[in-house]
Image (tube, rainbow, N blue to C red; front, top):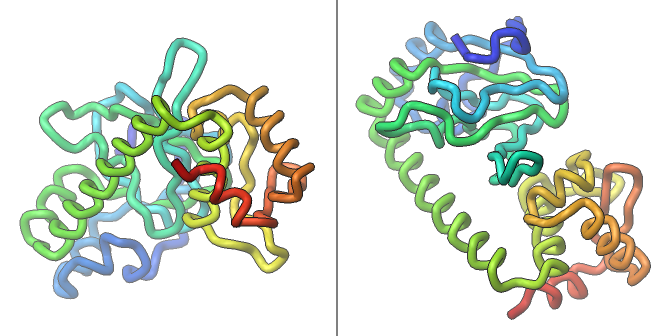
Length: 235
């Protein structure tokens, strides 16, 4: 069972066994086994799926909603490692010899997931070579992104890091029909994603709006002039 038992609720709705990365890449003959072993849960906004330091119980595949993956920066701050949405896996950073989650996963809106316990997930990796390959490539991509982020934290001006965070959110979640990036996000979460403070993000986003590069509406934003933003992240 997942570790955050006081926050998870069983969900009657199930995925279609073809939308997430796990189901798409596994053998068709393995899908009945997935169906028999999966558990479906619902999390409210702000609920923890898993907590940094807890023992790894399994993997979470998102059916609906969005999750932030984050770790402690110090006693009062956090660093958001990535955001995950429909079809994505979270909890995989706990794989390896040290069977404790090195990060936390928190719902930033209502979320439904398929939970796959660790024993069955590891058995799936041994049987489904295509999925294992896809997961390896995903790990490699995440490693590259982590290295880029560390480099940017050291060398990129904070304005560029904030802009890059906004552009990554656009690339990840796309645009709604009314032109806004398809995520409702606080400035504090943007700050934690960019590795800076709320006050800095507040100031920079106001400046970008005055410069007509973005538009803000509550906890949503739209990209107005991508060329202006792109220039700010160029070396």
